[in-house]
Image (tube, rainbow, N blue to C red; front, side):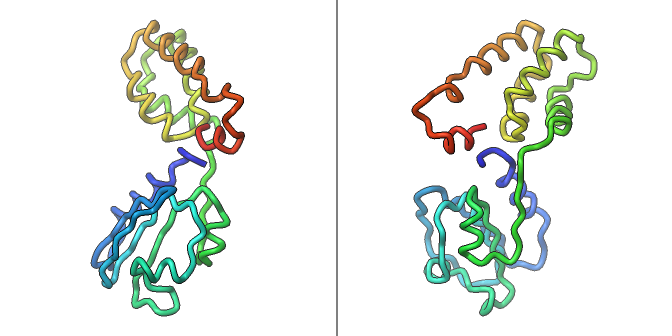
Amino acid sequence: MDGVGKTTLVKEVDHDVEGFDRVIMVIVSETPNITRIQMKIFLIILDNLWNQWGDKDLKNIGIPLVETDKGSKAILTTREQKVCKHIRSEHMVQLNVMDDDKAWNLFNMNANLDNFSSEIIEVAMEVAKECRRLPLAILPLARALRGKTLNGWKLAYHKISSSRLMHIEDVPKQRKEMHT
């Protein structure tokens, strides 16, 4: 599922790890275009892996297998659990959308709504619901609306709630879910 925070989470890992010569993050996307990686002790982050890769694919881009590596590790993010299973991941962490309270707290904190009127809070709650509990939607929207007037909040809610993506019948259900 898109927007739950996979990329943000692995970027935090990137900042906090020790013991690697390099931390390499490669955004793989749907059509990968990856160059050869130097053979050093490294942590590689493969972000947004769509296809099921095998041992041969990993060797081709210079990623040693767990059985033969000398300390190097790989973290990958994917929307598909089958990708992790195919690559024989040692550990899988599944991220889901936030619960309603956590999503509202994140929105409230980033919009800085502590000293605003109950009218603005009411509209802000509706705007937050439109973010579908996804941090990737909550953070930029809350920050963009910080300090806006009631009319600014109402305008934002109107624009967001009238967005056509969730109403387009030709978009497959799976694609819609990626954007919610």
